[in-house]
Image 1 (cartoon, helix red, strand yellow):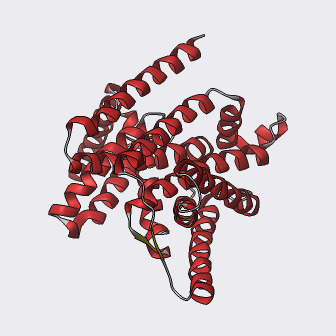
Image 2: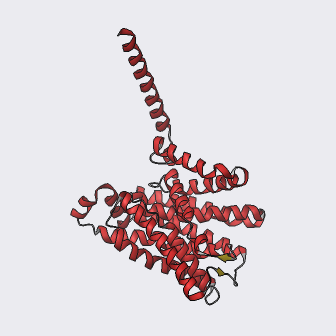
Image 3: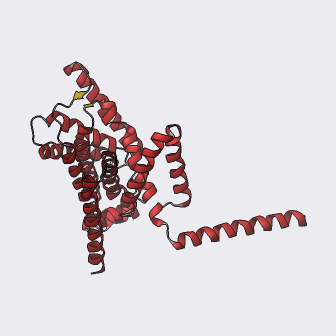
Length: 327
């Protein structure tokens, strides 16, 4: 019963945030709407990434692959399908890629899994580049049919809200329990009868669906796309950074971090482009060292723990200094 109340509260908060975001184009400038669109993109990407990677503790670097696949599918079909159909097809093809990729690499963990997902992302990018050069004679696509900016914004808002709502539902479902069990002790989960392979593939596919749909929706933001643009590793890395710094195991951590870091990224790109990546790297290091559960773990107890650790270090230094003087 308590879980139902918490889920209901989360959905109400989500609806309130969605209503505010939906009202932005009516009273704010084009620049603010453009910033909000970037925020919504990373809310969808980081929330869907954390849905699978948070509870299982898998470090997937394949977000760029699914985003790029969705973007290319959307660009190729936008002049033949309605807008919703192009976005849905981008999500569907990304799911197929995720199922194939997951079947090959989800039995691995840790560094091996991260490196292989990144390698497969690069393999897909190079394969598309080769096919375009050999059969199309050029690399990249010019988008002739582009929907209205308001349509793109509302689509991205719907995807972001749906990603968070899916995370709310999955966290309290049998799939969510299976993913949490995999992250805790996969062998024990298998002993208890959990089909861990199927659970991982489904979770991975859900992540891919949102990344693919997001790529298809955002592809029209550029009038010209090429593999280097839509398969840019930076998209995947920033998705992972946002989720980890916000707290991948939490619901709202990636959402808050996506908003904060999208705004921070834009400010740094405009004012201090030289230190942008360095700042993100420093924030990640500090988060891993002092906030392993992300910014969402910031509570009074966290500050109390820091104070205790600091006092213990000072006491240890005093004792060492006293021992040296006695000697």
